[in-house]
Length: 198
Ligand code: TMP
Ligand code: MG
Image 1 (cartoon, protein in one colour):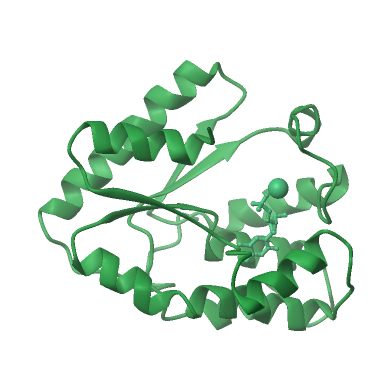
Image 2: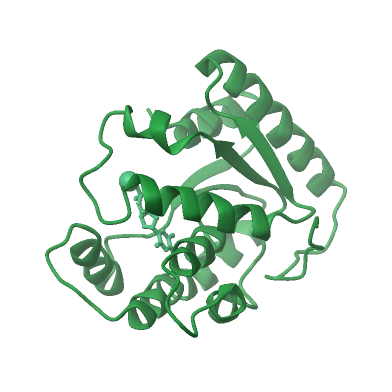
Protein backbone atom coordinates (compact mmCIF):
# COMPACT_ATOMS: atom_id res chain seq x y z
CA UNK A 1 0.00 0.00 0.00
CA UNK A 2 1.38 3.42 -0.92
CA UNK A 3 2.16 6.04 1.73
CA UNK A 4 -0.71 8.13 0.42
CA UNK A 5 -3.13 5.21 0.71
CA UNK A 6 -1.90 4.54 4.24
CA UNK A 7 -2.59 8.14 5.13
CA UNK A 8 -6.12 7.85 3.74
CA UNK A 9 -6.72 4.71 5.81
CA UNK A 10 -5.41 6.49 8.90
CA UNK A 11 -7.65 9.51 8.37
CA UNK A 12 -10.67 7.29 7.78
CA UNK A 13 -9.93 5.37 10.97
CA UNK A 14 -10.21 8.71 12.78
CA UNK A 15 -13.58 9.42 11.20
CA UNK A 16 -12.27 11.88 8.58
CA UNK A 17 -13.90 11.41 5.17
CA UNK A 18 -10.82 11.03 3.00
CA UNK A 19 -10.12 9.97 -0.58
CA UNK A 20 -6.96 9.10 -2.45
CA UNK A 21 -6.32 10.97 -5.68
CA UNK A 22 -3.24 10.86 -7.83
CA UNK A 23 -1.79 12.74 -10.75
CA UNK A 24 -1.26 12.03 -13.50
CA UNK A 25 -4.62 10.28 -13.70
CA UNK A 26 -3.54 7.85 -16.38
CA UNK A 27 -7.05 6.65 -17.16
CA UNK A 28 -8.51 9.64 -19.00
CA UNK A 29 -7.83 10.21 -22.72
CA UNK A 30 -5.19 12.81 -21.80
CA UNK A 31 -3.86 10.52 -19.08
CA UNK A 32 -3.31 7.73 -21.59
CA UNK A 33 -1.17 10.06 -23.69
CA UNK A 34 0.85 10.98 -20.61
CA UNK A 35 1.24 7.32 -19.66
CA UNK A 36 2.50 6.48 -23.11
CA UNK A 37 5.01 9.34 -22.90
CA UNK A 38 6.25 8.38 -19.42
CA UNK A 39 6.69 4.75 -20.36
CA UNK A 40 8.72 5.80 -23.40
CA UNK A 41 6.30 4.45 -25.97
CA UNK A 42 5.90 7.91 -27.47
CA UNK A 43 7.93 11.09 -27.60
CA UNK A 44 6.49 14.56 -27.45
CA UNK A 45 7.48 18.18 -27.27
CA UNK A 46 8.34 19.18 -23.68
CA UNK A 47 5.98 22.15 -23.62
CA UNK A 48 3.13 20.15 -25.10
CA UNK A 49 3.58 17.39 -22.53
CA UNK A 50 3.72 19.94 -19.75
CA UNK A 51 0.37 21.31 -20.86
CA UNK A 52 -1.08 17.79 -21.02
CA UNK A 53 -0.10 17.20 -17.38
CA UNK A 54 -1.78 20.47 -16.46
CA UNK A 55 -4.87 19.72 -18.57
CA UNK A 56 -5.06 16.38 -16.77
CA UNK A 57 -5.52 18.35 -13.54
CA UNK A 58 -7.95 20.85 -15.06
CA UNK A 59 -10.15 18.06 -16.36
CA UNK A 60 -10.50 16.88 -12.75
CA UNK A 61 -11.10 20.33 -11.30
CA UNK A 62 -14.88 20.14 -11.06
CA UNK A 63 -14.77 16.72 -9.45
CA UNK A 64 -12.11 17.90 -6.99
CA UNK A 65 -14.17 20.95 -6.04
CA UNK A 66 -17.33 18.87 -5.68
CA UNK A 67 -15.55 16.47 -3.31
CA UNK A 68 -14.01 19.32 -1.30
CA UNK A 69 -17.31 21.15 -0.98
CA UNK A 70 -18.92 17.88 0.16
CA UNK A 71 -16.41 17.89 3.01
CA UNK A 72 -13.99 15.30 1.69
CA UNK A 73 -10.30 15.50 2.53
CA UNK A 74 -8.30 14.79 -0.60
CA UNK A 75 -4.94 13.11 -0.24
CA UNK A 76 -3.30 13.78 -3.59
CA UNK A 77 -0.27 11.80 -4.69
CA UNK A 78 1.51 14.43 -6.83
CA UNK A 79 -0.04 17.63 -8.07
CA UNK A 80 0.93 20.90 -9.73
CA UNK A 81 4.16 21.17 -7.75
CA UNK A 82 5.40 18.03 -9.51
CA UNK A 83 4.23 19.51 -12.77
CA UNK A 84 6.30 22.65 -12.32
CA UNK A 85 9.38 20.97 -10.82
CA UNK A 86 9.73 18.22 -13.44
CA UNK A 87 9.40 20.38 -16.51
CA UNK A 88 11.59 23.17 -15.08
CA UNK A 89 14.24 20.54 -14.32
CA UNK A 90 14.52 19.81 -18.04
CA UNK A 91 16.11 23.22 -18.55
CA UNK A 92 14.42 23.82 -21.87
CA UNK A 93 15.06 27.41 -22.99
CA UNK A 94 11.95 29.47 -22.28
CA UNK A 95 10.35 26.88 -20.00
CA UNK A 96 11.53 28.35 -16.73
CA UNK A 97 9.81 27.77 -13.39
CA UNK A 98 7.40 30.69 -13.83
CA UNK A 99 6.36 29.42 -17.26
CA UNK A 100 5.91 25.95 -15.79
CA UNK A 101 3.70 27.22 -12.96
CA UNK A 102 1.47 29.34 -15.16
CA UNK A 103 -0.95 26.75 -16.63
CA UNK A 104 -1.95 25.51 -13.15
CA UNK A 105 -2.77 28.99 -11.85
CA UNK A 106 -6.36 28.93 -10.60
CA UNK A 107 -6.61 25.25 -9.71
CA UNK A 108 -7.57 24.47 -6.10
CA UNK A 109 -4.46 24.78 -3.94
CA UNK A 110 -3.47 22.20 -1.35
CA UNK A 111 -3.81 23.20 2.31
CA UNK A 112 -0.66 21.25 3.11
CA UNK A 113 2.07 19.88 0.90
CA UNK A 114 4.02 16.97 2.34
CA UNK A 115 7.35 16.61 0.59
CA UNK A 116 9.08 13.30 1.25
CA UNK A 117 12.73 14.13 0.81
CA UNK A 118 15.09 11.41 -0.24
CA UNK A 119 18.47 11.45 -1.95
CA UNK A 120 18.21 10.28 -5.57
CA UNK A 121 20.82 7.58 -4.80
CA UNK A 122 18.56 6.15 -2.08
CA UNK A 123 15.43 6.46 -4.21
CA UNK A 124 17.13 4.47 -6.95
CA UNK A 125 17.38 1.50 -4.57
CA UNK A 126 13.62 1.41 -4.14
CA UNK A 127 11.56 -1.09 -6.09
CA UNK A 128 9.78 0.02 -9.24
CA UNK A 129 12.27 2.81 -9.90
CA UNK A 130 14.20 3.36 -13.07
CA UNK A 131 11.75 2.12 -15.64
CA UNK A 132 10.08 5.38 -16.56
CA UNK A 133 11.22 8.59 -18.12
CA UNK A 134 12.71 11.02 -15.52
CA UNK A 135 13.84 8.19 -13.21
CA UNK A 136 17.49 9.12 -13.65
CA UNK A 137 19.78 10.42 -10.93
CA UNK A 138 20.79 13.67 -12.65
CA UNK A 139 17.20 14.54 -13.45
CA UNK A 140 16.03 13.73 -9.92
CA UNK A 141 18.72 15.98 -8.42
CA UNK A 142 17.54 18.89 -10.53
CA UNK A 143 13.91 18.11 -9.73
CA UNK A 144 14.77 18.30 -6.01
CA UNK A 145 16.39 21.68 -6.59
CA UNK A 146 13.30 22.96 -8.39
CA UNK A 147 11.06 21.65 -5.60
CA UNK A 148 13.12 23.64 -3.09
CA UNK A 149 12.36 26.79 -5.10
CA UNK A 150 8.64 25.99 -4.94
CA UNK A 151 8.50 25.58 -1.14
CA UNK A 152 5.81 27.92 0.21
CA UNK A 153 3.85 28.35 3.42
CA UNK A 154 1.88 25.14 2.79
CA UNK A 155 5.09 23.12 2.61
CA UNK A 156 6.30 20.45 5.06
CA UNK A 157 9.42 18.44 4.42
CA UNK A 158 9.71 14.96 5.91
CA UNK A 159 12.97 13.03 5.75
CA UNK A 160 11.97 9.89 3.88
CA UNK A 161 15.23 8.13 4.73
CA UNK A 162 13.91 7.53 8.27
CA UNK A 163 12.09 4.33 9.19
CA UNK A 164 8.63 4.02 7.70
CA UNK A 165 7.18 4.29 11.21
CA UNK A 166 8.90 7.62 11.84
CA UNK A 167 7.92 8.96 8.43
CA UNK A 168 4.35 7.94 9.10
CA UNK A 169 4.21 9.61 12.52
CA UNK A 170 5.29 12.91 10.98
CA UNK A 171 3.01 12.62 7.96
CA UNK A 172 0.03 11.89 10.21
CA UNK A 173 0.86 14.81 12.43
CA UNK A 174 0.98 17.22 9.47
CA UNK A 175 -2.27 15.82 8.08
CA UNK A 176 -4.01 16.03 11.47
CA UNK A 177 -3.05 19.69 11.78
CA UNK A 178 -4.18 20.47 8.23
CA UNK A 179 -7.55 18.76 8.75
CA UNK A 180 -8.04 20.59 12.06
CA UNK A 181 -7.14 23.95 10.52
CA UNK A 182 -9.53 23.40 7.60
CA UNK A 183 -12.41 22.46 9.87
CA UNK A 184 -12.17 26.00 11.23
CA UNK A 185 -13.20 27.02 7.75
CA UNK A 186 -10.55 29.01 5.92
CA UNK A 187 -11.55 29.72 2.33
CA UNK A 188 -10.21 27.42 -0.33
CA UNK A 189 -7.06 28.92 -1.83
CA UNK A 190 -6.15 28.70 -5.47
CA UNK A 191 -2.77 28.08 -7.02
CA UNK A 192 -0.40 29.89 -6.68
CA UNK A 193 -1.58 32.12 -3.88
CA UNK A 194 0.52 30.68 -1.04
CA UNK A 195 3.45 32.77 0.14
CA UNK A 196 6.87 31.67 -0.94
CA UNK A 197 9.09 30.54 1.94
CA UNK A 198 12.25 32.03 0.54
P1 TMP B 1 4.28 8.45 -10.69
O1 TMP B 1 3.01 7.95 -11.29
O2 TMP B 1 5.23 7.38 -10.33
O3 TMP B 1 4.09 9.46 -9.64
O4 TMP B 1 5.04 9.16 -11.92
C1 TMP B 1 4.59 10.26 -12.55
C2 TMP B 1 5.78 10.86 -13.24
O5 TMP B 1 5.37 12.04 -13.95
C3 TMP B 1 6.88 11.31 -12.30
O6 TMP B 1 8.14 11.13 -12.91
C4 TMP B 1 6.62 12.80 -12.13
C5 TMP B 1 6.07 13.17 -13.47
N1 TMP B 1 5.12 14.28 -13.45
C6 TMP B 1 5.34 15.37 -14.32
O7 TMP B 1 6.34 15.42 -15.03
N2 TMP B 1 4.41 16.36 -14.35
C7 TMP B 1 3.27 16.34 -13.57
O8 TMP B 1 2.44 17.27 -13.64
C8 TMP B 1 3.07 15.20 -12.69
C9 TMP B 1 1.85 15.13 -11.84
C10 TMP B 1 4.02 14.21 -12.66
MG1 MG C 1 6.81 6.40 -10.67
